[in-house]
Length: 194
Image (cartoon, rainbow, N blue to C red; front, top):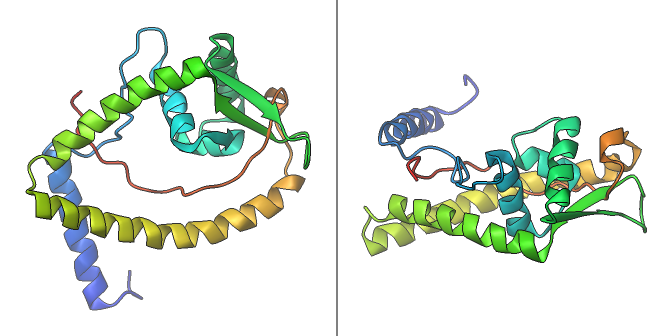
């Protein structure tokens, strides 16, 4: 941190302390954490939620969204979801047939809607202590932050996309279609109580 200005170091210390305080209040955690479902494990429900949020995802990006899970584990997870008729995998025909993408089925979309309503309820509980103007100001600040993060991530995404055609594809992922990076590294905050 020595190359940072004194102002930035003070802001980093304030952010650190704020995050600690937010965690003490029980509000720092993934909005996707422990989504309730009787037939699916939490990682499967999270995969469905991410597919709803981003429509069609390359398998490597879905793996990132799920905390960087290993390809064999992701492949087994997708096999289970495909068997339950919640997702379908597709191979890229135009570019590289090794590239596999995943999308929700109609049944998967319905399940994702249920998961999303739980996530939105958790987020609403986080925002309710603030007054209307405070909520709007917070949203404006967060949108600016995400936009700034996204600009840096988009450049990395383009570089990763261009380099992926030469990357080896795990055998477990062969039954499907294509990788692409999107915004990664955004902070997930929500109430941990469901």
